[in-house]
Amino acid sequence: MSCKLPDRKPDWKAYALGELDAGARREAETHAAACTDCQDELAGLRVTIDALATLREEEIPRRIAFVSDKVFEPRWWQRISQTLLRPSFAAGAVIAAAILVHAFVRPPVAPAPSASVDTAAIEARITAEVNRRIDTQVAAAVNTAVTAAVVETKKRDDLRTASLLAAAERRYADAAEFLDKRVTQIYALYSGAGVR
Image (cartoon, rainbow, N blue to C red; front, top):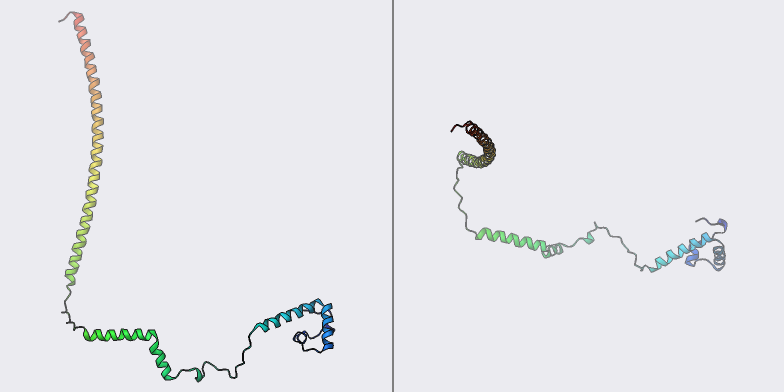
């Protein structure tokens, strides 16, 4: 902060801590009453002093110890007791004991006779199985296709037969009608001529 009267600016830290004599204190108070920048600085110092006053006092350590110092290393017997008391060590010890007991209690396993694998026979079986499955799938697909083709052909034949029958019936009806007319004409001709 910039003070408007820098030549008359008092030591605000000494004022806030009460280290000024009575004359310097009065002079600082009159200056603070006239200068707003110094009032703000004094208020900030008081807030800082109040915040520091809330902290508890601790004794300053006489010696700074480093992590690498031998003072912090546990003794050999402390390290062993800490290791034995850890749950991970206990779990590992139980597992190791179980493995050892299992190794001694389990009856020995006779070695399995070495069986030679006949790869040619296995390949032949695999090939036969693959061919069988392919033939089954192809037969099913062909059967489905043939069935569909037969059904489609039957439908077409039925439609064609129906259309041919309808056409034949129309022709027969036309021919019958024509013949009836012809017979009627001939009959009329002969009956008009007197022929019996």
